Length: 370
Image (cartoon, rainbow, N blue to C red; front, side):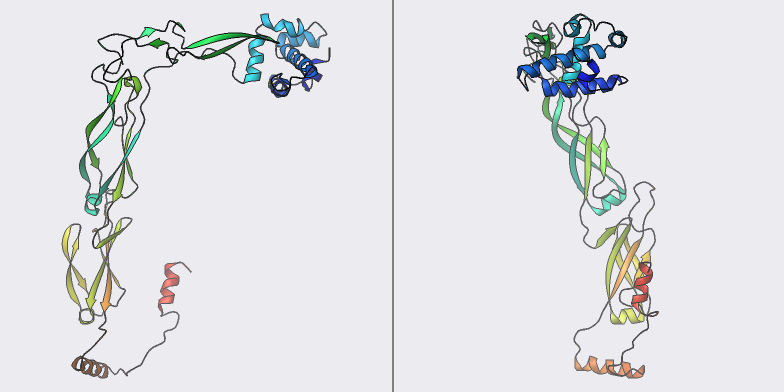
């Protein structure tokens, strides 16, 4: 018989993991189901015998000292080596997994609700109705009717799985699989609840109160623990996630904690100055447009923006001023404009080219840090 280390292709100081890895690789290549050639089958027996010896510390020590390999291929059946070989080949062994529990945790649920800008700023409360899985009130989650109880499965004796022994060229092989009679639960329900058909839960409509905190925005989610789907067998419910969708406002636009408002004023009002009432989330307020305000200027009103979700502070309202220039003048208006220009010493068609430090390009560079 060939040297066991040579058969597995490992060195004499190989670790147990290296031996197991080498055997698993060879077993997959040489297994009769993959390669039925008689010569390959003999090689597979040789490799298996080598693994049986080298995977057992006592056998390996005796083999290294020049002793017997304890029966070679036929010896593993009484030493526990068979389970190690099956674990190496199939990657999991044949350990009993036990019955599956009937009670399982429920899944999470997700719903979306719309809130307007005012509700997003100050918070609100909503009452919604949705359909989800709830505990069956008829059997209180047991799945059994008329106060009956589950019975131990007569096929698997409560183990939840059945075992089958088959013979192969390497000896007896035992395989386990979920019991077909009880579905792997280890018990059956002879008298299932007629309301839930033994599942322990039913679909029903329920009403839920939701508290929306101040400062939320589109994409925020509110987690409500235990308000999701109830699990099978009356298992604990998952969580309910409420996703916020913020609807657009008619005049205000949100940017983080700040609000923006566009305000159009006449040329005369921008020149002479005026006070304008504008609508905010807190009600109407008076905004002063100072004399000489240019188109594109902004007026900041502190503390009239959105509420910060965590800090509770308010952002600002930023009013963007647009000066309306008349597009068409009658003769009288045109004459007045000419006299106005003459009074200021302005000439028709006169323009001024500003240098970089005075132009809006300079402001742009400052805004973008260039």
